[in-house]
Image (cartoon, rainbow, N blue to C red; front, side, top):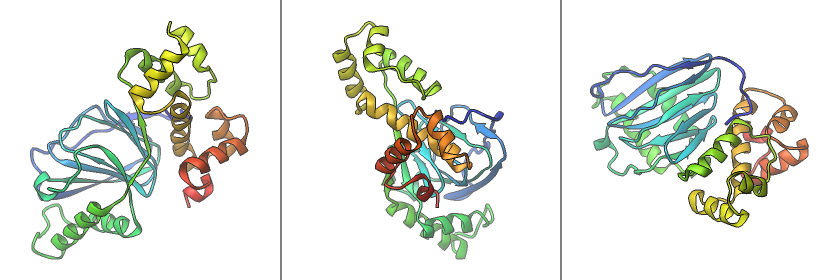
Length: 262
């Protein structure tokens, strides 16, 4: 999905936990290389968050992208796969379902406020078997309260279920810079342009043009966060000029690339 395809991808191991030691459990990981987990699920809620680097969570229905100051909320039992850019500093939270009766039952990206960020960082330093009745337990309670009110943000790329659209979208993900039109794709798939347009909107909730633009912009986040030049990222994403890329970026995210990561 990202135009940045450089670097070795390693498979990241996951902790073998038959049960959580406390209702809220934190895990700290430093990932120098691009990393990928196998598809898996948990019997508990997970918050995937990185204070540096960009995370992508893939489910059957969508890709969820979390640059710094964003996190991905994963409900219990949801099968998923997590990838991360190089030099990622993860601060994952695993949460017992009984501790978050209010928890949303769908995957989503959440905004991480400065307060929530500091709470997560502080919680990463507490013992695994912390005193639930002491200060660490109170920290956990405040952290969960802040998660409850965290705002949802639209950093999601919906994925189609129609096998024809899946082939189209896979090709675009592998080569986001390509400029094949809807008419060209419809000819390749033996569909009328009108039928393909209707199928795409029905299956993803987005037009073909909007989906491709979102793919490119979300894919730009990792290389931008890694410090790549805006010009190089814009061209790798398929934009003809830096100004066109920045205009599209500002329209979608409400900020320029420089402002977004400030």
